[in-house]
Length: 199
Image 1 (cartoon, rainbow, N blue to C red):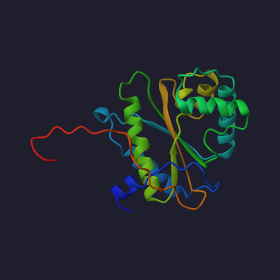
Image 2: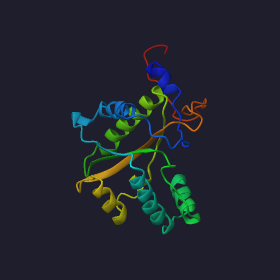
Image 3: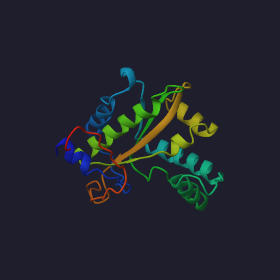
């Protein structure tokens, strides 16, 4: 699969097998993320790679409890409202039970923290698709970055005090064996051309 095909066929895969992919595949995806560009080549995005099922379960339980206790207004982001609603019903697993969760973090107060981390996450999603693994961007830990319980647990896993959680990614084999690659018509992301001639 060439780079453009890997980009154009990438979709979010949320239903994954419990089977852990081989370490070399996970490592290739991590290295693709680490190769991403960063502001002034700062290379400060920190990747916390979680494959231990007990830790994934404990983290899911913490997130479930925090969201279940949360109240959100009608203007809240749709995905945040969904997470809170699902948690209040019980049994909410923010990482969809995927066998791999990669949490990204970056320096607090660093102006490019989110942008740099987004480049890392995008590289990993494209690499995962090229390697026939499913992936999905996970934002719940970013939304809960200032929650005392979430931060305390993440700091036990290696998050530094001077870092903010910027995002996350789940990885695994798609439930049907391959990642979701169904066509998705693009109706947004408008483009404006300013040109001296035909484009």
